[in-house]
Length: 164
Ligand SMILES: [Zn+2]
Image (tube, rainbow, N blue to C red; front, side, top):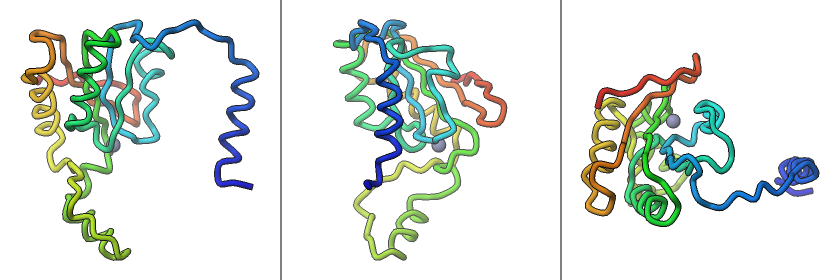
């Protein structure tokens, strides 16, 4: 017994029905989506996409971190991405805590996380505005590349496009 038996069993079922799609690693729809790790989000499903269509970049809070920028550069120049959607969501855990809250919580378990930045989100609109700006003004990404933001509502399944 391992802690992963359930997922290996799930994969065995999946692989039985798997037909090689012949897809390459390029994003067939030219899209990259930056979204949160929240387990309620099915990024492909909610956008009407399927495997092969888009690059999906996920982290806590859908933040445009240095590593997201690094990945977008690779996605654009090597893997066919021509547009980027940044997609945070309602009821996000990252909007409910501050970095110092998190440091406090880990401290209670004897762990010092003060060298980590969690990029918590005190104001979701402001964070999204900032993150879109980071992509749009990146010297490493093509000028004028379409970049949009939209907030996904985890209760209704609807996207609210941002005006930023
Ligand atoms: Zn979230």
